[in-house]
Length: 205
Image (tube, rainbow, N blue to C red; front, side, top):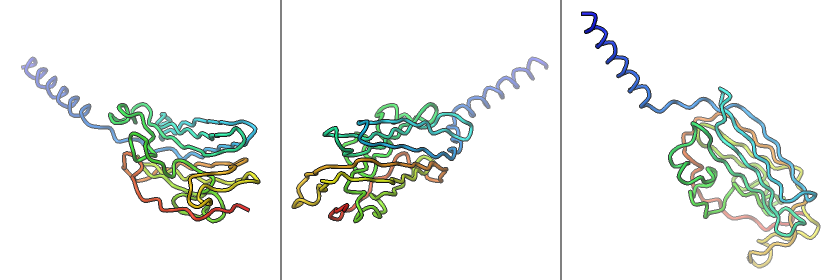
């Protein structure tokens, strides 16, 4: 009788273990965090990486902010890149290793995850999708990105100024970026694709 009881208990425990381990764990809440980034022409390019943790203190995502330059004299763009870490990495993440803020897994497109000078001038800075304030909501978190203290080079002409040609003169001298990370109900795997609209002609003076 004892052997039969022991065998039944063993089978029950085994079944419970299989059922438990086979289910995906509910991710912990993302921890509220404020990240700050500064870039100016004294050091270009400049890149900084920040670890976003969950409420248990475990690393969940890495956000990299990079200020890039084409001419070593001005900031031509700032790119935001988000990747998952540890238990937060999905099978798609492991396969593509791409920027979760970019809807395109192959990163062929360009959008709000790249901050460009034209998007920060007076006529565009209030654009809700591509202005000085922009938001990304995915994977149970919201990233609110604010760009401030922007200074343009004196000779700046945006690439939407010269008869629609893709041509820019000058760029940014300095800027500050603040990223506020907070929990969200969004379960999107990555930032959804959308129409980001057109920019206005840019005159920062």
